[in-house]
View 1 (cartoon, rainbow, N blue to C red):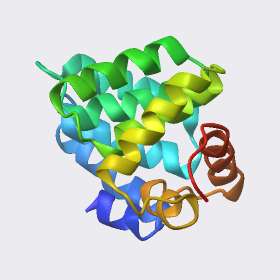
View 2: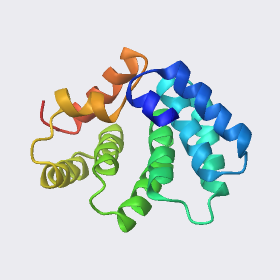
View 3: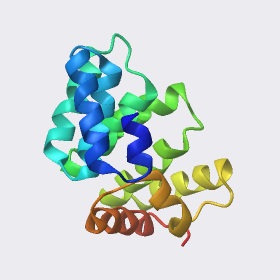
View 4: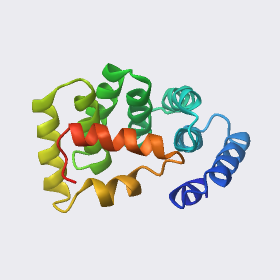
Length: 163
């Protein structure tokens, strides 16, 4: 339910539902990942990174969505090597994960790796030929704060993704 609220940018309700889920199952990797995502998009980036790391540690085998969550939070906090590692693991298991390629392009842009960012752009357009920043970024990243959305757009612009 938290993820439905998050998709509708109902951040407070999403956070409330995710916290309730964790209270019912504190050792659940999935519910901790959902909590990390709601914390992140609500603007609680430090909490989100800690919760995401906990979720991955709780998972016997971290699932792609858990690694994507961790990678996104690592990107935001500047832990670019950890972010890169999370996305490489994700793409080994799910090579066509659009969101992983998009965020990995941002990681490469943040590192000034133009060639690698261009390679990710090509993968993104192979998977979703109509991808553009204007339509896709707000859907993929339901940030509460406009400044966070703009930061993501700027990274992806720097990566060379089409407007």
